[in-house]
Image (cartoon, rainbow, N blue to C red; front, side):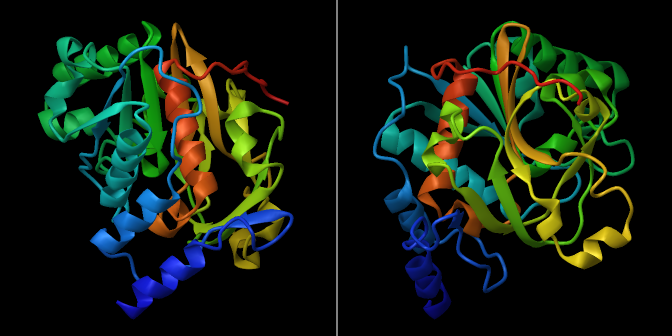
Length: 307
């Protein structure tokens, strides 16, 4: 309990530690299941109301089935999203680990699907196949999701979920990239790509420092067919990181939005550790991203393209 109290005390100071950066609490212990105290902390830090009033009642499905690496933070993400929806009234949250939710009739019930750290097995890097063991049916469910978004649905992809269909060019194009690899867990400094963009307004011109896995991306990421929001300052990573070539060869965006057909996609790499969510700014950022995905928060999502 002492360690929990320490984290809470530090978390409440987030946003006033420095002039240039908002700092999430530093990691002091191993990740454990979300406790009542931790959920209470998140509830106290979460926004009181949505940034924009929903145009209609919104439903968001949080899908958390991982067939490969199990992110211990996934249960924390579920709690965070539930708190954001319940406290602000921006959306109603439902949870499922049932792959059948990707049938067309099921997807049609929701304004957005949130993929919560749904990492596939390394063998095929195909979440749908891992569950179904049927190439044709797996391809059908993948196509259903792509069609759902293109037809006006929202997609929110959190941290490791960007790996769920690494070998699918169509999914990579829809999301804006695919997971490549990550250096070791460490302190990561994020800067605002455009401080005037409404989705980063909560940071008030300051960057965000937290501890995370510095994700790097490939495939469709090279095209930069998205509007970036947060970018990683690779110069501040642990020097050991640069022993593997390529880390500094490209701009390393870690959060972005993009349109796909008539729908909207929000990707947020933060975070591998629940401490990153112990921040009023990060909680508002997530809320705003979800409100963008469901279609309530209008903003510039035009792609920057390759530089």
